[in-house]
Length: 239
Figure 1: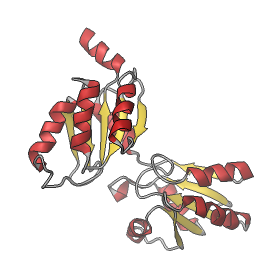
Figure 2 (figure 1 turned 90 degrees about the vertical axis):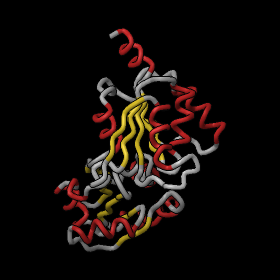
Figure 3 (figure 1 turned 135 degrees about the vertical axis):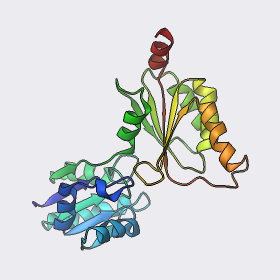
Figure 4 (figure 1 turned 180 degrees about the horizontal axis):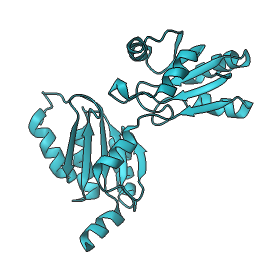
């Protein structure tokens, strides 16, 4: 491996989804910058990988840029990983990558599993492209305004959401998107993977029937949501 940064995609659930190339990069790295070192240690233990780990998450990424540049100037091979999926896709990583580009440091990406493309494939209505939104704003007013804007998107929109907030979000989506088709993927690629289809309102009712209106029984696992776009919905009506 040459000196530089290796952006390594890691499994979103099933550890066996990691690629041989990703494993080689982690084994050959002089240092691994990880979003959650405890999570990455489990991955490394599973495949017998040893090496120094440095935390790099949303709260300290800015300060980690200087450390990364110092290591790279000394000729280090730096692997960048997050807890699941691709660094930089609703996860830490962009600041280090941007700093490397500005300084002419070599950056290589090793593609891996992604909840975004998994949802696009599973939902059944994103075959002609999609808009990836990621996590919506936490403040209700900003979130509703953004959903209203996204309701005009011509292609399907894909979101990330916590299992603790997904029922409430689906209620807001029902107001913004109406009775368009929607998809929820939970625990994708894991043993308890679940895929649900319906309108946002129907999906909210299904999830609330399990947790209760007060959410006493918590859902588990990160969620990805896809909602069909304005053009997709129109095409379906015409068909």
